Length: 168
Image 1 (cartoon, rainbow, N blue to C red):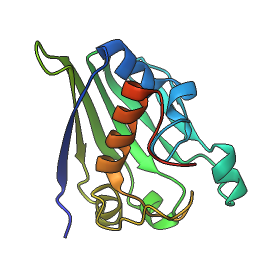
Image 2: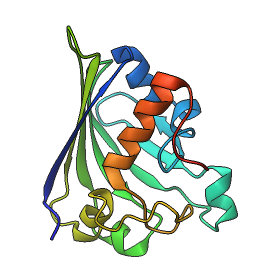
Image 3: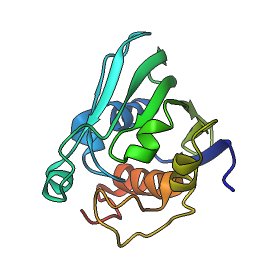
């Protein structure tokens, strides 16, 4: 069974601001991981939503992919959100989880990005984001993929080389 609290860390040769922008700006979020166009109101209590890219729409996912509320925003260091996956009825019914991005510049290893996802009460989502149901060959909307490890690897590649590793 997947852990309720999942923590992922990656070191990226990029500035904290570049990582912040890649997490919060739709022109970046559409380029890596599962894609999707993120839209954030970065005030506490502000809403965030991830809308489908054309790949999702072509696969039949036409509604919002993720939604939630901003709990804390301290650009470019920390972002805390409630987070709910909408594109699958089972995961949507599990309700909101808590997602934290910590971005810290190090002296010798680039910038450390730590993602902490509290998945209490969301066992299906926990299995997906842990990579337990990994199927990199699945398309958008197929409830599969490598989870946070895959997303962060793709983000790192995009920021460091200009190219994502995932094909969309």
